[in-house]
Amino acid sequence: MNQKELHHIISILKEVYERSPRPIATYFQETTHNPFKVLISTILSPRARDSQTEKISKELFNVADTPEKLSKLSLKEIETIIYSIGFYHSKAKRVQGASKLLIEKFNSNVPNSLEELLKIPGVGRKVANIILAECYNQEVIAVDIHTLRIPNRLGLIKTKTPLETEKELMKLFPKSQWKYINRYLVAFGQNVCLPMSPKCSQCPINRYCAKQGVNRSR
Image 1 (cartoon, one colour):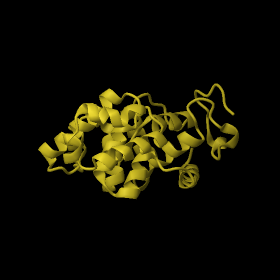
Image 2 (cartoon, helix red, strand yellow; image 1 turned 30 degrees about the vertical axis):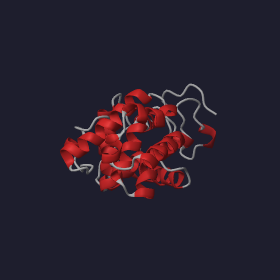
Image 3 (cartoon, one colour; image 1 turned 90 degrees about the vertical axis):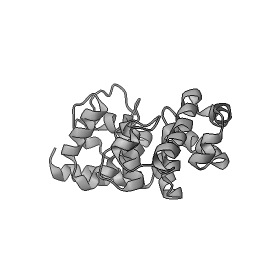
Image 4 (spheres, helix red, strand yellow; image 1 turned 120 degrees about the vertical axis):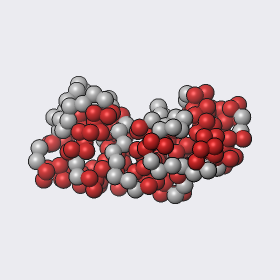
């Protein structure tokens, strides 16, 4: 695939993104411009629909919207608020631990470097790069399940791990697009290129797709 075709794909993915509900981290960044809320909502988001994460995050922030307030809640209180999101035991520990560490190590501020972000409970490379891209406008590629699955399905790359995927996508796409790649692919993966039964008949980049690993589509 040549650069002209890649540019066209990016343009189409951007169009899909612009008419789709925002990914959870983007939503909280655009509506609050609060790195703490972006961080906590992103920690809460794994294995949950964005609509549910948004709802539960808002309920939590109505009670505690700063590291100080959240760290003072007991685990039981946090669990009661986030109970319906799933994996609430571990997520409660992570958001409480993240809040305490922000107070102890970073003067209640969400750090803006990968090295420091990775010290926070519940923050791996994916979450760290989401924070860097969304909150601090840094040129990084956050790799989640959509960012890994879709480029492999398209046949753009052949990778198995998030780090491999991040490195290959950085080679493939211009640096000016890195911070947007996750946004575009999350929106595309949630609305068109579904994990099971992707909507190939409705896909605007169908003609570019190698359909690697697609056993059933609609």
